[in-house]
Amino acid sequence: MSRTVVVTGGTAGIGRRVARKFAESGDTVVITGRSTERVQQAAEELGVRGIVCDAGVPAAVERFAELAGPVVDVLVNMAGGNTDLTATEPGATSLEKLTERWQANLTANLLSAVLTTTALRGRLRAGGSVINIGSIGAEYAASSYGAAKAALEAWSAGLSAQLAPTGITVNTVAPGYIEDTEFFQGTMTEQRRAQLIGSTHNNRAGTPDDVAGVIEFLASPHARHITGQTIHVNGGAYTTR
Ligand SMILES: NC(=O)c1ccc[n+]([C@@H]2O[C@H](COP(=O)([O-])OP(=O)(O)OC[C@H]3O[C@@H](n4cnc5c(N)ncnc54)[C@H](OP(=O)(O)O)[C@@H]3O)[C@@H](O)[C@H]2O)c1
Image 1 (cartoon, rainbow, N blue to C red):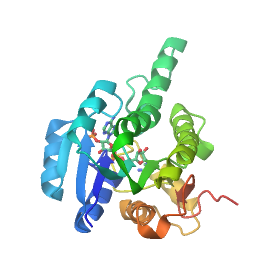
Image 2 (image 1 turned 90 degrees about the vertical axis):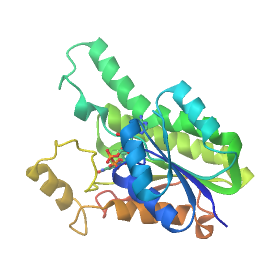
Image 3 (image 1 turned 180 degrees about the horizontal axis):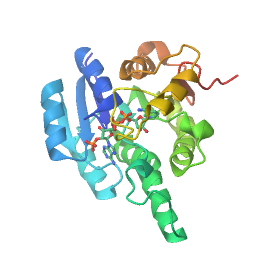
């Protein structure tokens, strides 16, 4: 049976790979992104439906939910990224600036998933899945990005307790360093890259495909008893034991 799969942030990187994977399996896929041009181009290339929506803006998410269709089987809250990497001022010079910076990351990575899930909650079908995208940064980073992803994991586990009785699983997938994405916005150095790869057990960067495969599994009939979890995809750079 063809499912309806929503992937927020499907224009690039991991989300784009996830959208392609579900579309190739015959699912009906809806992607989002903030720019009309990027959404249209990605939707056309992937053969999916594209809807422009900034996941951090309540009115945009409400409008998106109306357009998304009556039923959603799989919701992948992929939209996010470290807003500090594109901040105009590298260091926060005042508490006011610091507040802005923290709010930006909390909106991009936590509120985005909360708003989208809340707006679509009534349309999620039994047997379905909500998959939130965390980060290894939640384990180590003393930053608003890491804190936002840690909060996302905590919220996700709590949401599982609410939705699992209705047959919907809720999990977080937490990637480590993933190449071939726009995440680092040109800020990655050779030294940092080597350091991140060196911290893995298998001595390589992750790929969007590594993450997409786990998401596909969590949304499949094989994963119906996995809920309320954080699944780490990082080559051993962080272990849960
Ligand atoms: N790459 C890594 O190493 C890594 C590691 C850990 C976690 N992650 C997480 O993985 C997720 C995907 O990141 P990526 O690596 O694939 O980065 P990416 O290549 O920059 O893709 C990010 C996607 O999210 C969209 N997006 C960002 N903010 C949005 C918003 N407010 N509303 C709607 N769409 C939004 C972008 O679309 P537009 O720009 O077109 O709006 C784009 O499609 C993020 O949550 C990120 O935090 C990435």
